[in-house]
Image 1: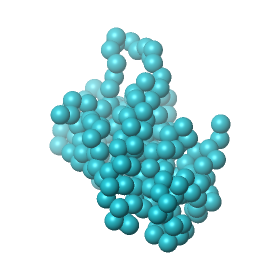
Image 2: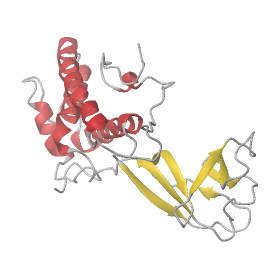
Image 3: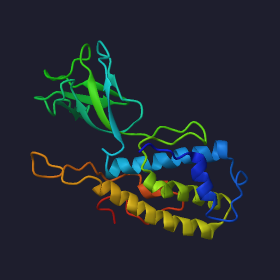
Image 4: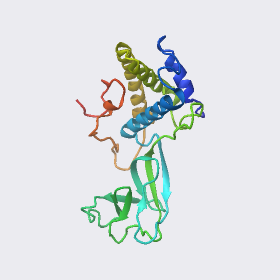
Length: 239
């Protein structure tokens, strides 16, 4: 089903959490709250990239750059998890300081936003070969408060966005107790969101008899992204 949610609709639900919310008074809708909605959706796509990177995902082909010029990271890539040749074979990523780490395979190394051939015989050729990048994507931003939000968003979890907006309004209006109350409700919704991402498709089979996981420990705790903090553990193995 197509996403129909707009920032304006999210704001109206958020206002309803407190009689002290005066629409357009605490924060302007078309500028401040629109940017808040954009940032908030980005937060949850970033969380999803750690928990289930293939859910909000897509692929893009970067054409042969020509000469020794690099293949450039696709716009909107939040977390790249696979590179492929035009024929669908995997291209491995090696560190720039050990370019011979996979000398028998097609390989590239990354420097900044660019990817370069590692120097192996089977590497893609920048004069002729394209590379397909598979990645968790960033959401498309709504242009106005009446534009629809990103088309891949799960509307069943709209309450996450609504509660973040409501918490922002309470925080800006110095209603500390309300922030704590709203953050607690948001945490409950966040647990459901993370559980959904962890189990949204099960029974996947592969040739090696184990589940491949992309989850990593974060140097910047995901908890810090959310208004009022969160007691939800967003990293596997976190204490």
